[in-house]
Length: 222
Image (cartoon, rainbow, N blue to C red; front, side, top):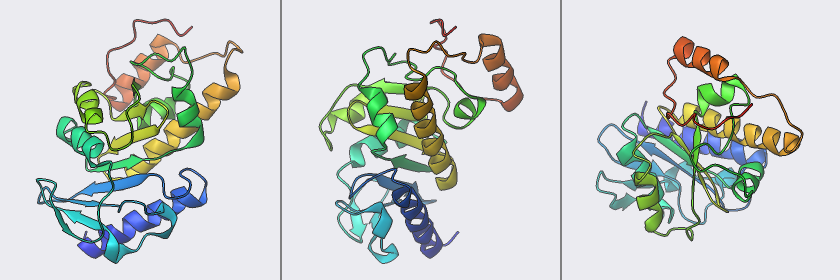
C-alpha cells in the first residue's frame, strides 16, 4: 500500500473512532510501522476526528522526526510495544471511557485485567495487562511495557487508557474496539456473578483459532 493510502487509512480509522466517542477531544494516537522500519504517527494535540493526511508525522527507524507535524508525546509507549511485539505493524492508543474506568477498579488483576467474557475478546484482543499510572509521555511507561516481555498485544495504562497492537491497522482498531466493549460488559455485570467462559471453552478457542494467550490462568473466574 502506498504512503498516501496509508495516511488516508490512519485518518479514516481515526475519524471513525472519534465520531463514535471512543477518544474525545485531542486524545488518543495511532501509529503505523512501515516496511523500512520507520513509522507514520498522528501528531501531538491532534484530534483523531480531524486528521490531515499531509500533516501525519513521519519518523525514521530510530524514531527521528523526518516530516509532518510534531509527533505525539506518547512515542515511548509505541516504541516499547513495537520493540517487544515483533508482529506488531500498528498501534492504537485511546482514552475510551469504559476501558479507562476499568483501570480504576481495585479488584483488577494486572496480569488479566478482564476475565474471559466473550470469544471475540480473546480472539481479537487476547488477554490484557494493566500497568501502573505514569504521567502522559513519561519515558518510564516504556520500561513498564517492556517488562511485559511482549506477551500482551493489549495493555491498559492505569487512569489513562488502552494501548493495542495489531498485525495491521484494521486489526489494531478492531481489537481496541473489542476491548472497549468487553470493559463495558464487565462494568455492566460487575457484582452480578456473571457466567464467564470456562477454562475448557478458553482452551477450545485457543486450539481452534491458534490464539497466543499469556499463560496467566491460575486465578479462578468461575
